[in-house]
Image (cartoon, rainbow, N blue to C red; front, side, top):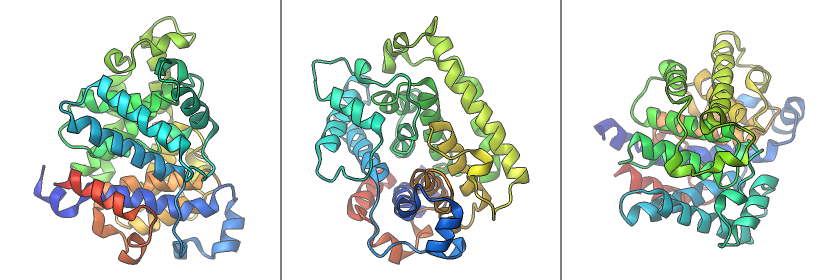
Length: 340
């Protein structure tokens, strides 16, 4: 780990940024941009609510983070251990009285099925769903230190597959975690889309049998390679749209018009990246742009915050915001563990 990574507290910054984006975008989800402007005023001046509640995006990120921490405490990260801890955390979240933040139907359906521990988790997975719930919560896989490339990719796809089994959900989760990891390692924002495109091309035909087992057989694909290629191809297509948007997009316009509304995994990733890359040195402005969008504002903004915080570190966020965001204590504790 580099000195700058430690000093900047990038894991803490990423987790706080994710929650702050979630809390800023949660009140504007389902609103169009004119309605948001009427309610909040000019988007560049948007303020965090006094009671900075988060959505299920942050709740499930913490569930993934706890699962990762527990699985890694027991030794080398392996599929069996992570599957067990993820399943436990997801079911606990599902049954929690705090699970009252308008969670997605896919997560609820899959978690209800995961409660039956006699059921193979692959039979609970929603193979047709590529909702953004797959990758809004994957940042911990990009932040946890000491993982091989295979472990990081496999874990990112596995956490998606427990609920969202569509190949694009898997690929977008993998790509999101990789983006977070690149930024914690000091990658320049200007180079990020090229690095992600190269990663997608390199992994296009790679199915992670060790982590996913026979998940692919629940689809109509003739073989696992064809299954996963469908997901990477959709991600490569959205990366092309992202690059075009970065060259042509007006920062004052709704980012969803360029890269999608974010209700599905690859669009949430791309629009979150767009907001970050439009303002790579202005993390709070990036969050505000993401929250003032016509699509899935909380998920887009939470991904923007994860990217911006991984790049800029914990000091990027106003203390008055960070101190009052919901779950602040657990976010900082988990971040500090991975910043050591």
